[in-house]
Amino acid sequence: MAHVFRSEYPDVQPLDTAIHEAVLGHAAEEFGDTVALIDGTDDTRRLTYKQLDGFHRRIAAGFAAAGLAKGDVLALHSPNTIAYPAVFFAATRAGATVTTVHPLATAEEFAKQLRDSSARWIVTVSPLLATARRAAELVGGIREIFVCDQAEGHASVLDMLIGDAPEPMIDIDPAEDIAALPYSSGTTGTPKGVMLTHRSMATNLEQLTPFIPLGTGHRILAVLPFFHIYGLTALMNAPLRTGATVVVLPRFDLAPFLAAIEHHRINGLYVAPPIVLALAKHPVVDRYDLSSLEYIVSAAAPLDADLATACSRRLGLPPVRQAYGMTELSPGTHVVPLAAENPPPGAVGTLLPSTEMRIVSLDTPDQDAAPGTTGEILIRGPQVMKGYLGRPDATAAMIDPDGWLHTGDIGRVDEDGWLFVVDRVKELIKYKGYQVAPAELEALLLSHDDVADAAVIGVIDTEGNEIPKAYVVRAPSADALTAEALMTWVAGQVAPYKKVRAVEFIETVPRAVSGKILRRELRERAQGKG
View 1 (spheres, rainbow, N blue to C red):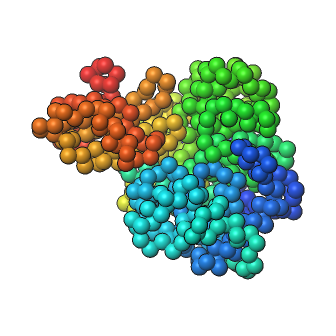
View 2: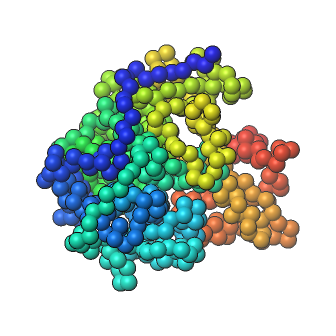
View 3: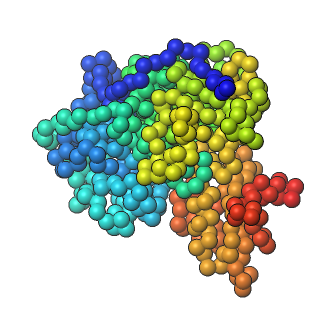
């Protein structure tokens, strides 16, 4: 009989509400002139809750007037800006699904996502317009490319703010209709569209509510990207649902990040481990007044317990909290509550309300692991995705007939219910919180004329980051191929975070009889054991 771990918190009712209503449904009347969003690069640019509510409704009307209809997919291709939430919620209010696109994606990568998602509408910003246009050309069938600012020949969402088109009244089924379609590699393979319903996203906000001390007067800094489910939930949807003020930065650069904390008196940070590393060790941190900070939460990748302690001690803060989840889980399943006085070092949290977990044996997956031992983490709850778009086989491999989502992560639970993630599926590399699929890089490497075979694994560099390293077999008569030349070639075809950052030439790639790459042998080689 399966041993099921259950949350110690009372269940929450699934929130059968459209995501724009779950976040902004009462924003204008409850928070009114409270500042919702501030541009961290120019704090004269800000939006109140009343403006955000009105603007997203006007933009929704503009989208509908342009022909956007229920069931359409809109690709939102932008760095963090104060316009991003208004565009996202406008699209969902108009009945569309939003597929969020990495702003650094190449035109070819963007085109793959457009094609796979069947997106017919694009919203971008003028600095990224050339990439968006090229992607649209590669795919064909794009109805219109809108810009958030101004660009000749393109309709601007700014012009929609003064339009008089009627606000669309769309009948949304929260349990079935897809609100967001972020792309994730899951536990392995190439990126797949993750179907997150209005209900799964809204309910996950409800599940997180007891653990996030947000409200009017609370200021957080949005430096992690909104296109990523962590940023979308923790830095956009959750704070805007509660009347907090979100200071928006387009990217992480340490000095402006620290300056924004000081200038805006930021209360809370939601970050990934590389930012914790910078806060713990970089000398420039001492030049800034960070005394307004009350807490730090780290997620998106494992955080070393000693590093977390060094960061909290340096800043005079309570222990850095961790949280756990994945895109396929909307994303949260575990969090270390801020109220917990002495959480065990390295724990990623306890179960959120209405969430169940099993730890199953790695050797016999149909059986539970022995108490206190490691196994694969399985999750069941209302935040589980609807599935992978157009990939029923991949969905069935991820979610079993009983509704358990197989995370591919390896963990253990202590006697008090704290989860520790001790490993994860080896294939997926997380470079500074971004997912990098080895299969995608391997396929690209194999397309090079001078490469006979290739395998990619994650290795830890001198700064403690996991980076993609390629093991490459040169083709016959390709002795002149260098690591530098190959890395440069790859870099020209992928987004910067996906770049191969180390290359080692080998005689053969170790493979099983089935053809599967024996990555364990490559890891041992990387650690000097092979």
